[in-house]
Image (cartoon, rainbow, N blue to C red; front, side, top):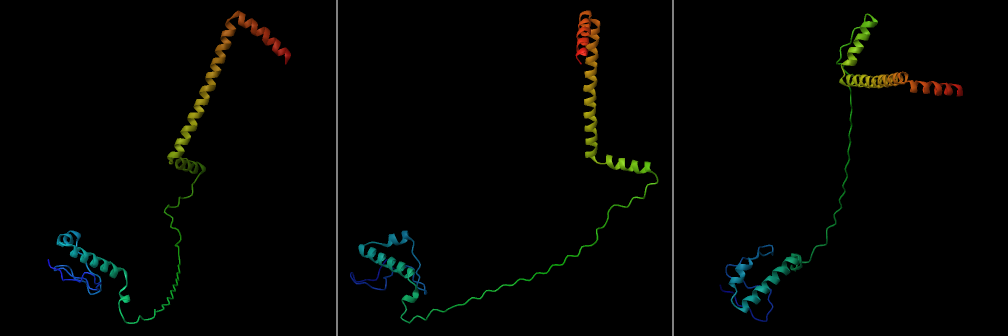
Length: 182
């Protein structure tokens, strides 16, 4: 690879180009060569200096806008006035139709018994109503069983007292004393 010669101490605006190196794009931004390719091309310290000078110039050219290089006087900045206006208009009309009844109307009952029978049938149609009725019936049965068991125990206790002479005597003596205190 051959590089064009550059004076050693002279600062130049142009950067020497290697053969096969990418050229600058027309907008002033140059494409970079991969590091491994550029490192393999370097043979001497002059080549290193040239490469560093080129990279610095490229970085400087990329950081400074292109209008700074031009000799033409820059135009005054253009003042833009943006007037953003937005308007919204919404109109909504809702027309509801009269509700349509899906249930057919029942005929009037002929007697009170027919009305009651229909009401009971409607009540039993609901599973929740059946669960509640059976729950209340179970609770009532539990309370009745507890009451009858208590009555049975009290009658058994009274039967034992009546069959035992000592307990019967004590019950008559202390029962009469308690009745006198009342």
